[in-house]
Length: 72
View 1 (tube, rainbow, N blue to C red):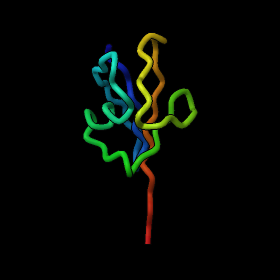
View 2 (view 1 turned 90 degrees about the vertical axis):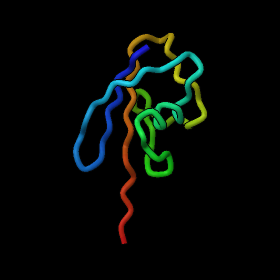
View 3 (view 1 turned 30 degrees about the vertical axis):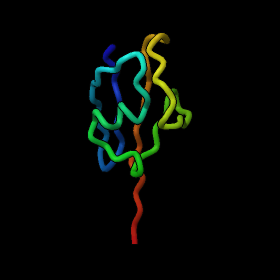
View 4 (view 1 turned 60 degrees about the vertical axis):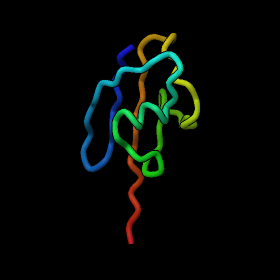
């Protein structure tokens, strides 16, 4: 199943990713070439653990990846 992922960093962009039945949110980040240490993943506005499976049975999936900015 293909899902849309909104990525928020300096600007906002939307990408599509093919997700398999057993894929986790960490797998989604890998497919997007995003380091999981640098982001927070939200599903329907709520944080989700990286090792949680993406429930593709729920139809439209609203996933947002927010890059964490650290400065010094």
